Length: 112
Image (cartoon, rainbow, N blue to C red; front, side, top):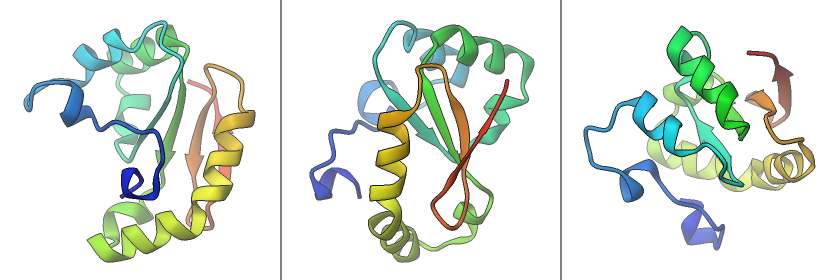
């Protein structure tokens, strides 16, 4: 959805094989200047994955649980409506920042 809007973005499935496990791709993010956006907040509570995420020092934004309850078109509409706010936060966030993106598009920083 974001690529169609001209956002410089890559999906995990475009860079890694289909059955890649989270620790595998998180390890490869180390040293990259990027913002990681996901709805899989389990990465922040799994000890191995959260340690790897912290080690990468990338900015990680997690869509709050509301996201998985939206249908495809509602997700697309939500992203279009809130992308400027999310993008602004991501551009101003220090490397290594972790935050949850709420339904209103605002981000709440948290510590791993």
